[in-house]
Length: 371
View 1 (cartoon, rainbow, N blue to C red):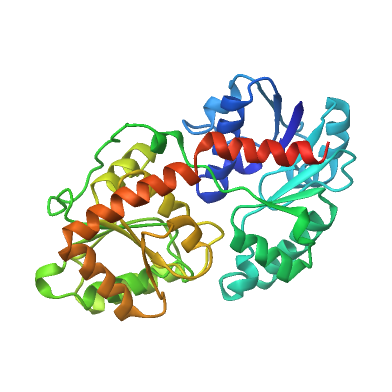
View 2: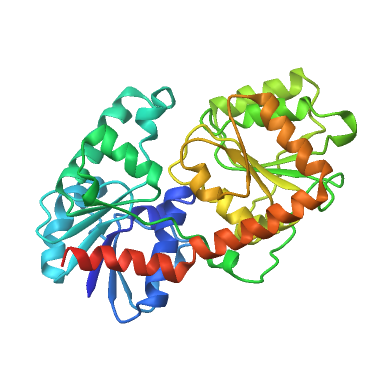
């Protein structure tokens, strides 16, 4: 097959959507190398994360001429280029597809956070996102949801026939399926291996970092260990920083000053006492899976998609209940048998359910169903 992809996020985004695009191409080229994969992108940010895809075996990258406005090209012109390229199908990897596609098409919907947490988005952005999601859901031949939770949200907000939606979980970076121990990043001397908690994700109100910090405040003094925070944010991060300062918690919350790449993050997961991720809403919850594949026990939410990602043996909490989060921290900090059991069962669950070959096969089944 010759499959085209909207690869804007692959080449220009270095958080969740970009990571998803890159790992999807990774598993497809590994397990289905006989296909040709054409990556359409309006522009390319070249760095160590994107360069491999410019020369990846089986892939070809297509960009517009410098005189064409990139967003116009992406929305209105790719359909004509897809015809000339002789695609068998087109896959919009990040919530949208070009207009007037004359090829079978698939769209991956990651979440509808702009509807479930509208206060995080400006009104014009919500209007634009809703129009793009609505068009993609109605015009794509098949929709891929990255969790059953997201599938249910698509049905609720866009009235899509459930049979049109396939759940294909998000793959993770290859390093998490390997024995690679990662690379220790630069951290303050007070951060010792196996004596810190970890938070990974954007710092916004939906992710509930402030809830994690308030839960640490409730811990007995002898159980308080630092929280290492990996992620960036704006207004909400400033709110978190003010809380830390006002409550004299600067010694307990650490924001690494150096860049944390994939290898450094792998190390942090593998050597953390636990990942604490009590998000209010996620399309999937990738840090939960990365942690379990790194033998790191997980505390996460009992709502949204997190129970799917975490499985039956992680510690689930009510993200609105600070006391519940703190109590689960105490359990992992004081019960080594529970901690080791959580690690072993979590790893078994993640390595089976999110096996890359299985995910590639599921995606290929979706493609075959519309050809």
